[in-house]
Length: 494
Image 1: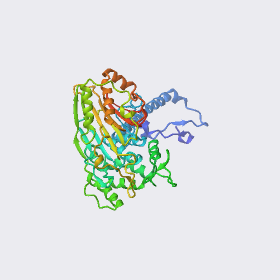
Image 2: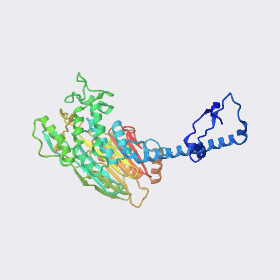
Image 3: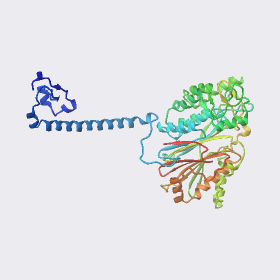
């Protein structure tokens, strides 16, 4: 074709040229996309098979394009899966769903929505139940200063489904920082637990709580009720308006001093130095020498009780764990009373003096944490340079009646056996509530229990309004979470 005749040319796509038109490339020829209107169209080429040749090239190009897109998509999927454990990446769709409270991989339940969300983010980022629970506990130390905090005392119970081992976190003997002021143990206790069993870097767990303390958190209904009942004496300006009135629900509160402490302890390489970072500042506030008696939280063997259905695990003395096992053993040997539809703890009046949370994964690893300032807002003494409320846990209150987390592990011969975790807060008797809840679980036949797990996982046996009871269960490769009263504690999972 004479190029001076004026046809409009197109540049052939490289995808078409690969192996299909090499001869044309060598000759430097091209076909006109739109014929010139001033020249008659050469019908000979069409009759000779020009159009069928174009169609063949078009079909081949589309096939190669489809293959290229498919390979690109597959490469992107592979790249995403290889980096998914490095950040908070949403898990892939599973093709089916469950009712709220049932998850394929893991879940966490706590008294504050922000802290349950933070715990889930740590799970999705590749953390285990210890990472999720410790991160959520640090978060609660910021947003629930009436019930817990860096000045609180912690107890915990951890079951590792991979090794089959269980460990108790104990607070150690109660010590006094000053008359009426308990020695804080939160940071060394949580750091110790994470150092032995956590997976994510320690600073990663402190990131979310530090941001909440620095940039602010919304006062929720639980904190607002405690403020209204307590008043603001000793709590200003942290939890007060400029006129001294307590912050109400939905008000934003900040604690930049606490944020500074959290940033500092994020860099502490050992539990020992984690506690020192806080104690030196508190001692300076009080005009004291740095305390010679430092907090000594420890990791101890759990207390165990074998029952026909499996094994019960709890924390040792001076927690209420031994009392709990004694009550359970007596009830089971006597045939067990009819489970009370509302555990005595949850019928009782009085302000809960402890904070609780629970994390579980679908394989049956469980972490239960409970902490206390001994009373609402503890001593009411706010350390100005740290933003921390000190507890009034002293030697006379060393027996931790509020601390008795419980794990039930089914028998080793039962492949479908549940792992159940129970933790409660309230007064006056946590152990009676735990006993009632476990007896209720053991009294349900296995087939009925399976139906309940699959159909109504978050339904509670009662709507009692005093105190809190959390239950987490690993069953049939799923994680389940629920609470009494129903809906009291936000949960998250994936």
